[in-house]
Figure: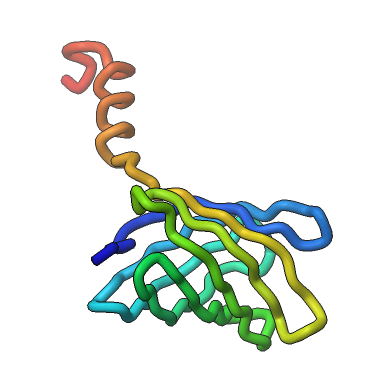
Length: 124
């Protein structure tokens, strides 16, 4: 069984314009939940859905803006590290989307950078 629990970085397109996002999914069996934070004015959204085999579908509902839910459908790659598909808001708006697993340990990267930039003995 595929497991998409973790952080994903992605892009969705609306009218040819890309918007980046960061998604955090939690999977229990086939059921998904999580949060998405758009790199734009729409902000944070709650996610619920499912993953059956490699077919993923979820609903994104913004917490403070846009009252209409957005439906996402797509396919998880065979290696489980990328997904892509289509999104729609009713019949009026639609576009494509893609995401890839974010394996970066951002905290470890920050600690390594800080260690390199602080001269030995500077903390005294």
